[in-house]
Length: 471
Image (tube, rainbow, N blue to C red; front, side, top):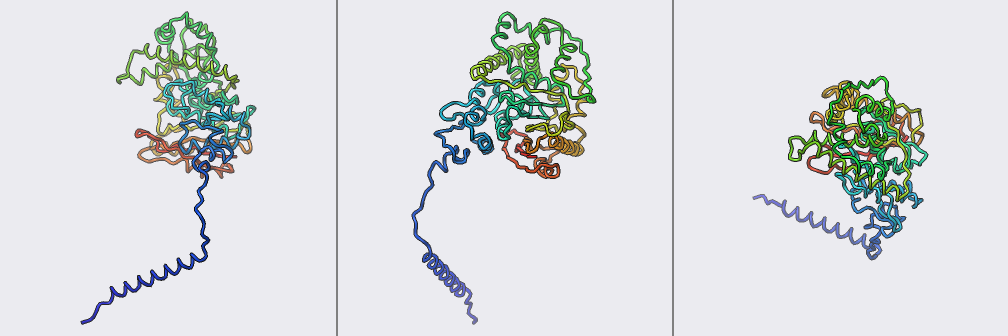
């Protein structure tokens, strides 16, 4: 009978392998210098301020806001410090993510204390950011940090070619930096203009006038009388009109006669925006458990608007803030009305129109103003075409808008583009990768991206990307 030696053979081989390992360990130990394990200082690894400031300061000297905890926020804090950290006095006036420097509160601490509806910590909805419920807003704190990182000075110029509801302009105004916002939607140009103008309202004077006025009289001026509904055909072949001119035309031709027209221009615009906010609330909450009479929405919104204006006026006066006056233009990001190399930085968020129908979203506002929406729909980036054609046209327009951004940027100027990965026809888009691939051929010397996770089970976006480009 033949004997099976396979088991004995395997045991013998394992024995040889064990001997080889022990021999190798013995040889290594002869050349290894015994040393004690040295632990790094706790401050160098556990104090995030040390990392943000690249070792220059600890949390004993500089304090981040307590709610600064996401990776992208810490990166932005590090980026703004890398540009402005050599001058702590200026940094305290401009920083977005630090609460204290050398024991003194920063300006953003006071500005973000002017709380607005839906505010989350110190990141959004403070000051007039919350005025008018526009979908797709981005965080003012994030925008301020990007402006700081790009090193834009008070004699510089920031451009937002997709200005939406004016977040970039509000931040530039409080930093004292000139800015230009452009949008193809005239209604949003009006909203943005009123939001930045409302920062400068003299609350004591406005309050004295209101003490003699019934809020319902203001409501009835806008909604309680029959208006002649004149169509407002804003020609898209004649763009680049100032938003203040649009407002002047709206008051002349589309809003009723009455006592509100006798008020200062910024005052009546303030009441106008408050009424539009109430109209939006009333429109979207009809049929829900939050539905209430239209007048109640207006009274509530007016009181909350006034609280914001009071606190804004107080903090700007107390802190000696000198506001810059932004310019808002009714125009196209695909053909910017600016000369080459005239802009220090571009900060923008292109419309998510392939996911959000901005015409439908603001239909109540557009209808109240009498704006013809059919032509507007054909002009908005992302709303052109259907299905796959929509994606193709969106890509074409995005590339053209980037070409224009590069043209107007000064040499070494930077652009920050905030964009999400929306889903269209079951397909999750990735325009972040496309923009990064286009950057060299469009003439940008550098391109980088910061990814921000969108938290919440009902979010349509999985990630939002901050795409950084340098000319």
